[in-house]
Length: 272
Image (cartoon, rainbow, N blue to C red):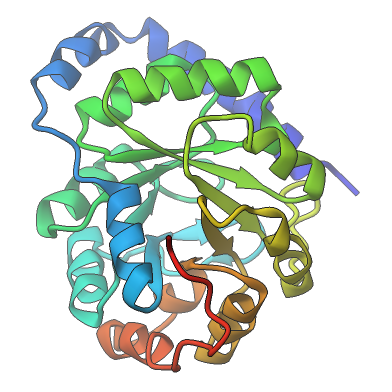
């Protein structure tokens, strides 16, 4: 079986080289410096999950695992529906080759809501972080499966310098241990193996206990119902990232509120 993540990163290296060669990239730093302060992504999740569930709703046109999902979706309309349904934060896929996204999707979604916005991409170079801030991102994603410890620390430092929050994504215990050496309070556990694109909710269940209570534990991928959220919550998840399921719905706002309607489990961990 091919290593999907390896191929994505190889293509991203080429994409980043082209971005650096684009004369427009020379203005990113100045534009980033002129942006208003970022909306607090981590703080929004802390506040929301202290009272119930924290939901990161994702705008995603396509994916390697599913192919086309909702290719003609309007990012502004979807973002407004997510916000109306009670989502806490917004994630927008900006990778084009594998997810059909574009940085313009993030710009449109951000301008349509008051939610903090994550640029969801395969970040391997500081230029992508500076571009993200210049285009209005409040948070970026770092995937431990794709980065060495030193590379992850370098990129996190760049993001912090530009006022961005960082979501650190993991898939196994070793990656969680590495993530805990970074500064970000947000640690996501992806139930999907990005190398094989297989998904198993047991991944999150088994690994959530490895994330200390002072961090924000986020369950990612494969969540399709309030029962799934409750399952992850019982394992210790405070927050959830959901995209594919929501992007498939005809009436998105009620679907979001429906996901969030399940009572918080009695053994919910305190956010102290």
